[in-house]
Length: 193
Image 1: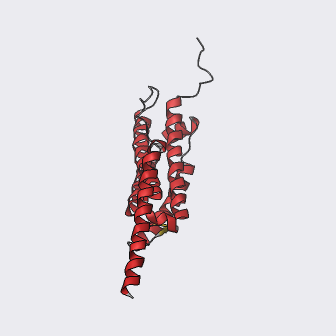
Image 2 (image 1 turned 45 degrees about the vertical axis):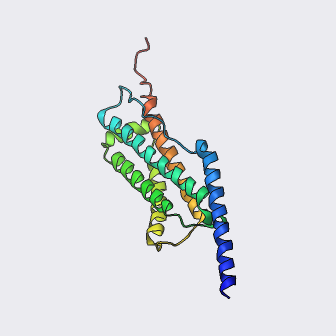
Image 3 (image 1 turned 90 degrees about the vertical axis):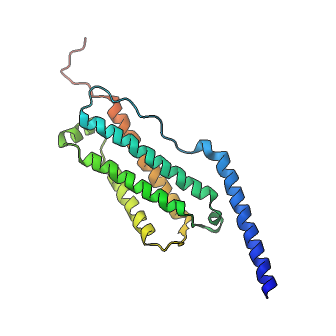
């Protein structure tokens, strides 16, 4: 009986090692395709202090969200349990916590804007409504993660849904930065010279 058990354990260990090595090789090959955050942009002169601070918060939040998205992608590629339809890697929990704190920090910065500045940002073409909805959805994933026991596996489909949600949050912050950098809309009474 013990020889059969030993043989099964050796086969299982060899299979997990092969899956781990395959994941490492795949991650090494795809590193250049992972999301990345560029350098912070210089704030235009027409932005006030509060919108300039929001621009810097937006870039900082985007950097954190990109790091979380990269980590989730790495977990999906490297974790040997993905072949069995689940993720047990602890880095998924860390990535989720990082994304949650980045989303909350940016939303606090946005909510801290005076109402006039929020309306001005809407005139530039950005509203935070969709970001807030996605943050709530991310909060549900965080609660499921926090309530799960330590080695509880997460379904690959759930992890991929979180990955898509974090990528959508990144796109939202990019849209906010583009709106802030685009400048003020033309004033109808401004003289054309």
